[in-house]
Length: 52
Image (cartoon, rainbow, N blue to C red):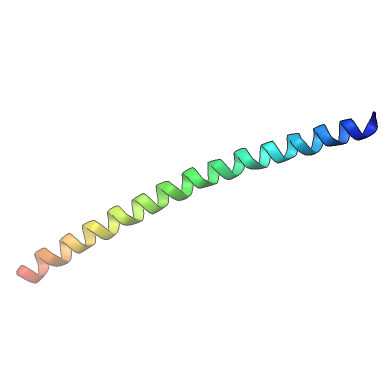
């Protein structure tokens, strides 16, 4: 009986960790998107300053 409880606890912890990882992946995706946007804009700015 005790082993079943332990397995349930382990599964619960793993599920929580997975949800946490998903959350981190969302944050990472957002940062990546933001970085690409900034990079794109800075490229545009360099292009306009080069013309001037």
